[in-house]
Length: 320
Length: 282
Image (tube, rainbow over all chains, first blue to last red; front, side, top):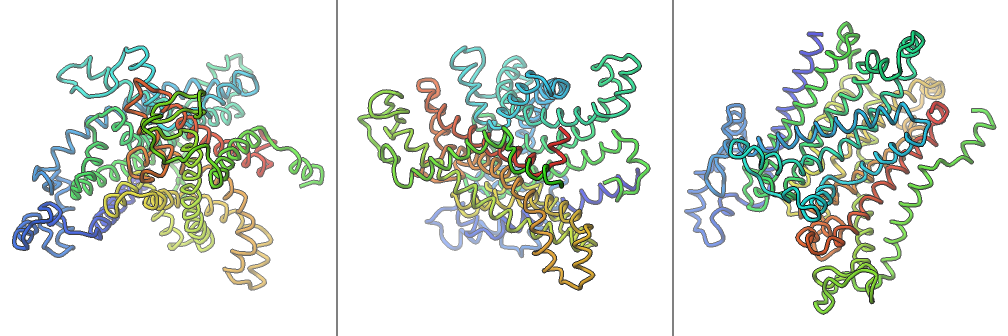
């Protein structure tokens, strides 16, 4: 098990390093000089040269890369090319909003998907099962931002019970914070819940065919009790994998949903950075999102071993 | 497979395939017809007819805030959607399939390297890649297509690798290898035809994901540029009028949902149809 985890840690570190090179190289091939862009078309060559020195873009690329990448672990993301402000604190502020959104979204997705998927599996031969499967198919086909627009139309325009956008920090007003986060989280969570419910259905269907469920039933245990006692852990393994992959999807989906609800999250920061051509900000935000996705994948791999004791005794190759 | 089983496979189309095929057919038809006919010019701005109601007068689905015909824009939007989907899935299939086959056939450290690179690419979702490409080269349908295509490569590579691994252990591949056939010949004559069906299923599912990604990117302003109609952009334009004219969001939203549903159902149906074990198991 330790060897397996060590291997996953190594893969995570190498992947992060390669991703950092890829993101930096990608932004470095960019046509145009950040210093010239920041100063505008009327800038003198001397002013541009001075700005370049200020940004550090006059140094060789390898030096720039090392300076950038060595600052990342300590939260030193550099200075914005446009405002001159430190990028680290901005990312930290915005990350909080996005993380709450993703967390709520995941919670809603799980709460929706587990009973829906399990019921669809248990009743897979009945009309109820068919309707539940159909519902999840429709849910999968609706993008999160469209779900957001629909929810705004229902809850903000028609019934006027929830705000259509905006954000109040939790410390300032917890009620307003919750109300403003609810619709964005629902738009992410309901759609992901539909996706997840298909995997839950498939996992529960597989478990239902297992001998241990048949044995438990033969001993007089009710179907749902047998599923809960013996099936949930077995069905959880494939579901956790998908849950992890979905967490990454939610993180990226949050970029769009934040735009619908004008939430000041990481996605909005990224889009503002692109609009203002604040390229270091874009580079930093992309890197944070990519590392988050890689970290999620790593955690899912690690969780495998916790959930499935059989994997602990296998070699790393066998465990994969 | 016995003869009756083979006959069943030819005859029994499942409901998912039929419904999915019909929805996809509808989108394709709308796109094809839009090349020769649309009720009105989809980009013609007509202030005199702005926000005309649906199902009344000249405009079946009404007009938007610029007086442009919604139905005509939906039809041309179908073309945009399919165009982006075809190019994106094409890029992913053309690059991802050989990479996956290579990893499956060669194995060893080079195969491992391909798959690790593939895993790394997984960390760059289409949306993120498109935003990066948009920041560097400017947002356009082309950057969106390339980003969606590149982000979809891992899906094809994984499927191709998995299927190649199982085909490589079959008797006919072993026979071809012992007869001294080259790896390229085995790949083209034996592996590719045998993994083609699952790749078609993957293409259908990836198409649905590409439609969602394109819609999201156009919504954010990183996809198709105006005035070319696109469903995602139509939704974005409708958002500010959601309080007064919600129908403007309804039609493009419905179009996206039906197209995605169509491709997903088609993919599911094809999977069941092409995999007899799965069909009999369920």
